[in-house]
Image (cartoon, rainbow, N blue to C red):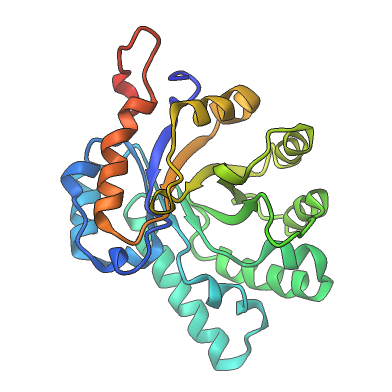
Length: 270
C-alpha cells in the first residue's frame, strides 16, 4: 500500500469553525510534503511564513472563495460581477505567489451539466477568470462529490462533457471521495474511467468527530479497487473537523496508515 500511496498528503479543506479560525500547529504539519489549505486561510501571515519556509512539494488551496458565492457567480451582473472577479483574482494571485499547483473553486459543475444556459454563463465567466493567471503551472479544479447525495443520480458522462466543452486546458476536477459512503463496484469504476483525463487530485473525506475513523483496511480497499487511478494522482486525506484537537490526533495517526511491508515506514511519503 505504501507504493500505491506514494503521492499522499494532508488536506485541511474540511476544517470548520471554530477550528478554522484557531491557530494551526505548523510544527506538526511540517512533517508532510504534500498539503492543501482552505482558501479562507490565504493572506494569513503565519501560513505565508510557513509555506515560504517549508516549500511543500505539492501545495493546493481548496475553494478560493466560499461555495455559496462561487456557485451563484455565473448569474451575477454589473457591479456584483466586477466585485466577484476582483476578489477571485486576488485570492488566485495569493495562491500562485505561494507556489500552489492546484486552486479549487466550486462553480456547480453538476448544474452546468444539466442547464445549458448556466453552462454558457459559467464558461463565459471561467474564460474571464482564466485569462490573467492561468499561463503558469496553476490548475483550477472544480469539486465533484462521490457518491452523490439525496438520491441524486448524476449522468457523469454528461458532467465530463460539460467540463470538456469549456475547452480550458488547465481546468480539471477534484473527486471528493466520502470514503465511508462509497461502494466499490463496477459503477464506481466507470465513474473513475469517465474522469480519467480530467482529474487533478483525489480528496478522501471522512468525519472522525462522528466516529468515522480512517484505517489501513479502508485505504487498502481504495488502493485495491482503484490502484491504477490512485497511484497516478495526488491523494489528500481530509478529516471533517470543528475542533483543532481532532485534527492533531488524525495527523499523529497518519504515518501508521502508510507502512511499507515488513513494518518499515517509508520516509518519502511525508
